[in-house]
Length: 425
Image 1 (cartoon, helix red, strand yellow):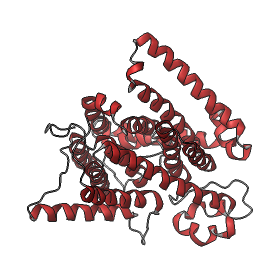
Image 2 (cartoon, helix red, strand yellow):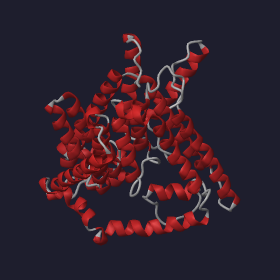
Image 3 (cartoon, one colour):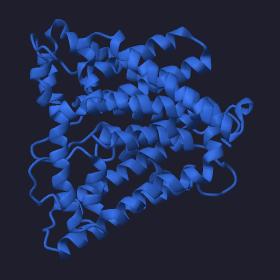
């Protein structure tokens, strides 16, 4: 159940301003790099300010209604797994450097974003408003991507070198295969956000029965295709299928037996698959040629390179399979891996990775019925399952913006759950 507290217009306005600022920072600001220091994002500064505001309110005797969240507690506990893995790596000969502990900071930021959203969006009206706002912001980023694809006014040369230096050449006039990045800096990571925007368009079209959400959803889908990201295309297909399933489960009229659900599931999967396959041929080949390689990975050069890198990380993982070696940023390797599951087991071992999965699964298993009925619950479940697939050829947890978006959907879904009962969720 979500909160049914009496509306307080002033408190509601303050809460929504915090969420608006956070969502704008996540979707429409680039990562800032200074010298050799790790990147900093605007939402991290906002989370720090929120923590200071909460502490100040506590000292003033009016503590903020921060939810008692099992998910936040378990995710924060992952930092202990990191410390254990760092110690295990040091014990087996890997030197520790200060930058290794930066990964703990990432966990703190993820927990902070979740708590800010779960505190600010607590009612059904809040959550519907939050989804509309998030969709509108991603649509703005999609419009920015359109200007990048066509290099309108030659604007790319003025800001692309700062937000996406590795993509500068690919977005300059005359390049045959531009890959848009929005304000993210990486086409694969931007495809993650654009896909969520496309799904939100579908969700809002179902909710409000307005054609403008179909148009805006298609705009986000087009932006995703302009990234030419196979991973993003796969991610969109997964979140669409999972959302349809979760949305159907939330409808009382569709509580059928398992045999009926199996049939509906097969029909839905086949229908969505046919839609996605047709999409490849409705859009210009210039946007979809990389995506079509999904059907012929054996001859894909980039896929073969991935497999070779995965092999290197697999043997690094096998050196310390249970506890891992920690971030071990002083340990040499040939190429950075783009399979985040391998990244996790290599860094934190099977035990740490199992805990990471449990931190998401256990809170969901305790609140599944409530999540399915929640306005944002099916969105979160779809994005979470899709993220697990996205992490096979790319990354979410180690990408600040990707993890922030995941925490945004988690906070929207879990905010206000079990309100007034005093139990953890």
